[in-house]
Image (cartoon, rainbow, N blue to C red; front, top):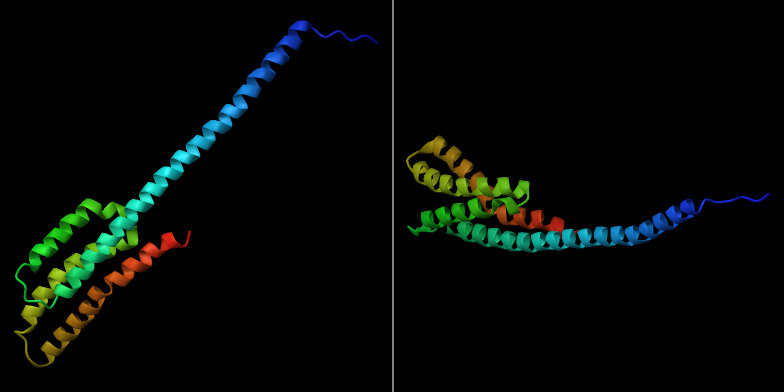
Length: 156
């Protein structure tokens, strides 16, 4: 039994083998390079996020300690913090982004409510003071919430 193989078929198989031999390593190289680029981008994002989180922490800490200060410039610090937040909030995780946005508003609200509470007397003043106390506790907890939010990245 003599089987004859067409020489064109042998040439085609040889050519396909050579193409596959060249294509497969190129494909692996491409996929590897793509993953490396993705890793570099993610690493850069994490670096920026750490920087933004540190700034958020520092700004929040500064504002929370100014809360009972009589410094007339504190509204400027709130405005600077709002501007900083508007320029950097997308780097924050959604949970802390919402908390930080609320925090900025609450600080200004606390100052206004603190002044207006002085106008009340008796039981109404006690209720208003209790509301202020709860708001104050929420305001000063922002730095702990920022720390918890960034801890997600330490768990990788």
